[in-house]
Image (cartoon, rainbow, N blue to C red; front, side, top):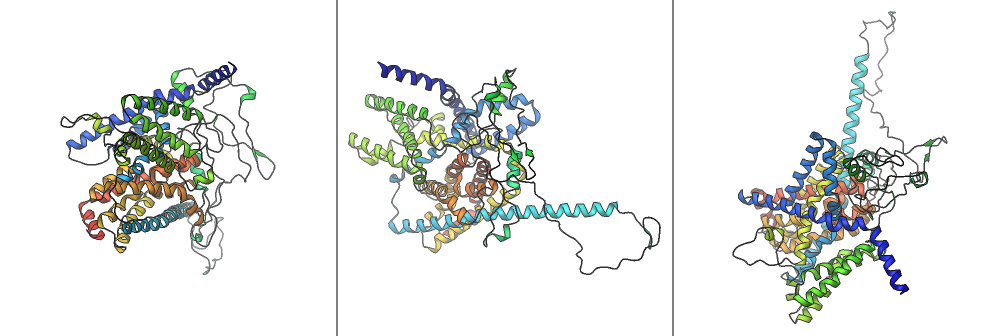
Length: 620
């Protein structure tokens, strides 16, 4: 009796604590996903009428981003606040669990046609060389772009200053001074430079160990809509430093910056906090001190915090207050909460009963796939450096499919076909009269949600719109150069190793997210299954060894611009999802970079002359 009462009390406490979480995940998130699907379905129908082929998820992303910008500029502030409040829980859910959505591409590998041992070794060689070449290369391109912009701005400011100084000087007759007396001629100094470039003066930085610490509730979302603000992120990028080394002496003109904060995403921002604060409930603030002993008040915007014993007066103010609440500045959590594990464990038990009575296997495989990913997240951090949770999810999913195949007596391959049968949201919303309606598999549902997560990145881009506008040249220049070089170098290297033309063409979109990579593969005539596998493996390996490669190359890991570009342009969505926990400031740049990389790569492979040139270079 005591055990039952204790269990009942613990269950009630957990339900009370995570009530808002459960409401957000199971009541507010599904309508957001369905709305994204309907929007992409409409775009797909419009493209079909125009006889065009392009991923509807990318078009939907661009349209939503433009709509958010226009609404912010033209309509009252309450409108954009309401939109962000409605879509916020769904977008947080999609971005936080984006990595697990790539698992179907790896789970279905055994269904691929075997290409031979020799081709596997050649593919591995191209894969490894390309990764080791482009991860640090992208970072150095970003540093070069920053250096070019900094020198250009410095020279522009110097010329403007010199022009203003000359304009303020009075026009004097020969031999006159300002007082009207005769002055001796000043001899010229041949060794004096005509133009002196002043040394850039950077803003003062806080010393190490003297940062402010905010102890408050944890956050559960990669999108905060007002985390530190773009101004704080821009300051960290402008003050970003690189440790001096022989390799990167050319790019060593920037001072050192303090390490960026990382956030714990264990509570959603949509939870409206209790604004009835008392004095001992306010989070403590550690003030940094200057060398002279005077205390410096950290930049802390308290405009969104309601005064003690007050509540927001309207629903609009309440939504704005919940969206703009600042997250805590502490280390992010890389493990799922117990409420998530318990929820999907209960769903797995219920799905097992449904499969035993009706034979419907999709809920069983879907819940097990997600639970397997959770199991990988509980591994020690040292093990996760080499074993990504996505690999654990794939291995355990294979194990369950093998058991189901043995029970059914159909074998592993036949049971694996039940995992993905090609029925995604587009086929469900557009049923064909010639083919019977069938339920989507677990892999099809995950891939459909992956398309929705790409659309959700529009809100992440809107959050850091000022950062993206200011550093548009660095991002565009770096991503365009990487895409062009990656497209041709992979094809030429594959041709040198003697790979089959189709396999060499499948390596071109390896740095592009899966929906766009499949479009590029279709344009080039490459096998889409192999392309999707290479893309997912690139993201996993890049997320695991990418930071190590950057550190080995003496890249400053506290620079959001450089780290975000190097991760997004070479590890696409999987690398970006890892940054959402470890480095949120860099995640915005990473999301933009991998989207631009996808658009540039698709554009390169859609142009007929470039298609012919790439096929010819591959030996087709």
